[in-house]
Length: 173
Image (cartoon, rainbow, N blue to C red; front, side, top):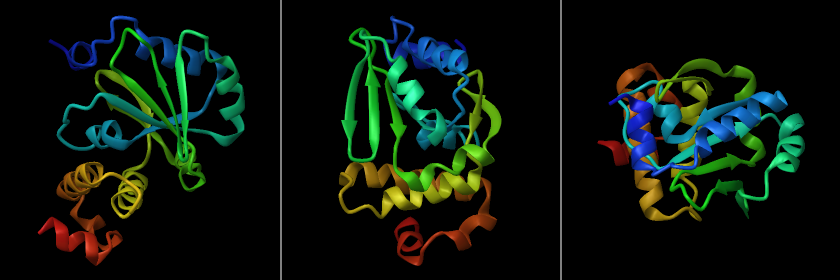
């Protein structure tokens, strides 16, 4: 079984939400990049996740939002727009925190679950994970996953260790 088939089976994405969403981004010419766990998977040994986190270029965000078909469930949170579809467990999370907006400009194409997608630079992914791991409003279980993702990134690029605050490094030892 290929990675994409496995992910679609795990997310029970019978509706084709992933392909539809990526097709919408392409047809609208929306600039974006993958972040979060799937972004980390592009650089390190992959782990399973039910979500796809992305950042959309600020200039393209309104156009994308206006194009969502009524079949999609769109929920707005303080720093994200979450997209889902009733017949899929896949969650697409569009990061709306302005700190991430420059990630799109530095993204490079990588393999993500057998798809060639723009992925945030590893330095940007690490920064995003540091922000998430130190966010006191974030659930403790999510912060633990962020710490694991930081450890995964440092395993493949140990020279990035100096970009991680000591308070986080202490938790990784």
